[in-house]
Amino acid sequence: MSTVIARQSPTTTLTDPLWRVAGALALAHVVLMLVGVITSGSPTIHQGQEGIEHSYVEGSLTRIFTGGYVETLAFVLLVPVLVFLSRAFGRRTENGGWASQTAALAGLVYVAVVIAGGFAAGAAASWGAQHGLSVEESLAINNIRNFAYYLSLAFLGAHAIGLGLAARSDSLMPRWVGWGGLTVGTVLLLAVPAAAVGMADGASLVWIVWWTGLAVLMLRHPSTSRFADIGASDTAR
Image 1 (cartoon, rainbow, N blue to C red):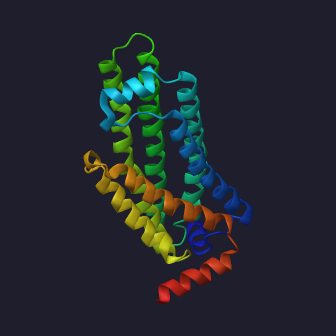
Image 2 (spheres, helix red, strand yellow):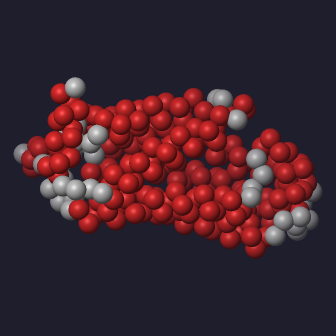
Image 3 (cartoon, helix red, strand yellow):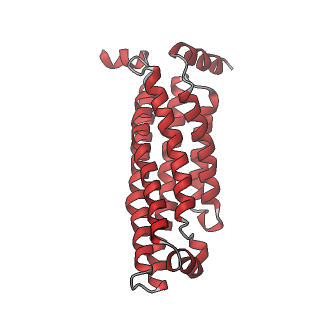
């Protein structure tokens, strides 16, 4: 019975300050991630050995590691947002709850793959390039980082799709949250096999736009009743 009540009162324990804190963390994730990427300047898979020589052999380890640490902080901040969204979405129906919990798990796997598979390999490649590894060896290790990034997009896509389904099931958010999540998630899933033609970065940018909009919506979270009115009007359409 308590489960039914919880699903009929989707934001009973989620106060406006919690929504705003989650929104701020979601925006901070984007800002820190972009700052970290620009600062670290890690070479892409298409840059090959020239990229390793320019970024790792000739680059500053202090700059590279600073950028990597900023990126890591960005993904640490993402974790509480993923947990919050799993509680905020999918509270009205069993289908929505299933989608929301699946999204949370997929998002956490995404974080784990990026940090453990991507950042760790990138750090090892850059350190090794200036401490005895050949350019070819550093390139091989750095490509683990690149492929971890490509594969992680599948889990980021699953998170977006799950959140989109939960939003559509709840009918408590503007239509673009649900349909946008489904669209962005599909693009991310397609970007994995299309990474060879450079689709991965474009898909990530599309996700950033959708995620930033969701973060701003959480920051401006007015009231449960207004969200309900928005969802009801969208459903009526």
